[in-house]
Length: 325
Image (cartoon, rainbow, N blue to C red; front, side, top):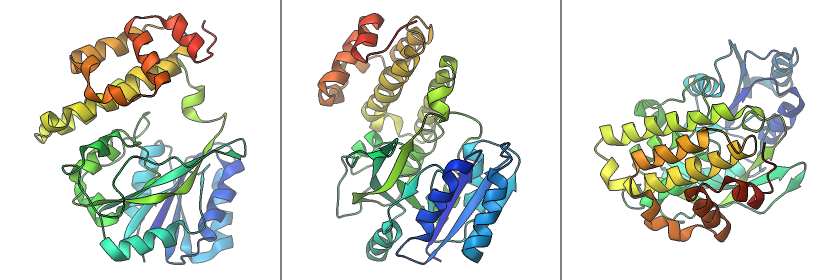
């Protein structure tokens, strides 16, 4: 079997059917889908998983487990997978009809450990332009050959992994934490012997009001610091930190100093986490303000960076049209 599509499901009865239908509609038939019901409590998702398995037959399997979080559900699916490659599909998202066929053609040609591809953002039914990482196209490469791979989006879902490579890596998704992708994807990039970019958007990421990171309180954003502690320790333990310090610093600027700060500002522009983020950057990356990749920030993001440096949180709130508390 070529592909195992792992779909974690937790209280997503309103979205799961469309998600699974997008797998069933694939022009490539060499797949299985593994639905991991992660202890759903809505009284509907678990039963819907079983109904979908009955509808689509033996290629759709269901695993019911106690709630362990998104990462634990992905790990369960990975362990149960029989396919040569593993696809992680979030249960409120969907994929292009020819996604697996497109990837199968590249696998036949290069047989890489990791394939990465673009995605669309679907917000309330309005699909935006393709989002593509700035990566080499048309040839396999490694992190050593192209360190900018660490500047790619860290998502689990816009890439696929050779199952044997993932299992042998020893890397797994952490359970019941935020930012599990940063703790995982960037480690797998370091370990992969070959990565290839498919220059197409094949995945539809659905933005919905009920998503975890849009609704939890500001305090949970502190977990981004724990995620980076874990990631940086991984690179240091393998003697890779010095080689990729500039890229890891830029990754931290993007995900801690900019993205996490804005999420917190949307809730409370006086929250102490804003100071903690700044202190973390100074402690972990003393020269972060001189990172050469800063020159590549968009004008808006560079302005946001400068306002954070000056602790002008009110002005930053205005920049993002945020109502401060």
